[in-house]
Image (cartoon, rainbow, N blue to C red; front, side):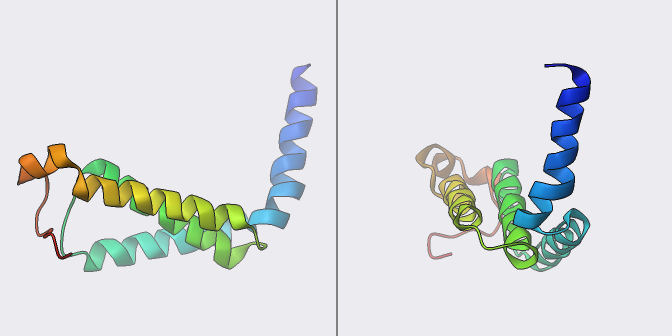
Length: 108
């Protein structure tokens, strides 16, 4: 495949197909950023970097749900990222050394 064909495919994907499925990127990005900033401002604990990144991906998926078309993939992906975040706070290895977390308890 030639570069021009690849770029035509990319253009079609990001200008036609993706907005129909996910909504306008700038709107979804703004909402995801608002959710992230609100979470960070209100979060009473800081967990490991993997947990925080998983939560950011959840916000990204929530923004896509809010701004785009209906797609079960967004819900499934969000649940997967939440499972990863949960795993980060319940991992046996990390429980042995709780220095990686501030303010997280067994009861939430």
